[in-house]
Amino acid sequence: MNSVAADIINWATFAEARSVLGEAFVRVLGYFREDGTKSVAAIEEAMRQKDAAALVMPAHTLKGEALQFGADSLGDLAEEIEFAARHYVEIRQGPEELLEKVVQL
Image (tube, rainbow, N blue to C red; front, side, top):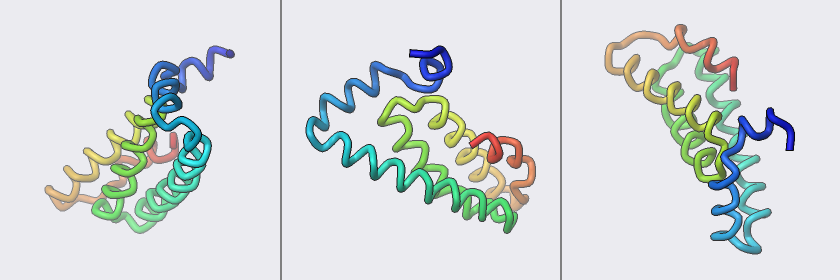
C-alpha cells in the first residue's frame, strides 16, 4: 500500500465496514461512489450559485458516507464545508470563502 492511500483511508474503519456489510459491501460501496459524485456535483453547483444553504445537505451526506467507509480526510473536509455553510446561512453571508475547500474535494 502506498503512503498516499494510507493517508486517505482509515483502514480499520474500512475493514469494519467490510466485515459488517459482508457480501453487500461492494454494492454499498458502489452506492457511496454514485452518491458521492452527486454530492460533489451539488456542492460545486451551490458554490457557482453562491448559495450557502444549498451546500449544507450534500456536504452532510458526503461527510456521513465518507466516514462510514474510512475516507476520513474526505469526511473531515465535507464536515468543514457543512459547518461553515450552516454558519454562513445563519449570518446571511455567501459561501465564497469556502471555494478553496470545495476545490479540494
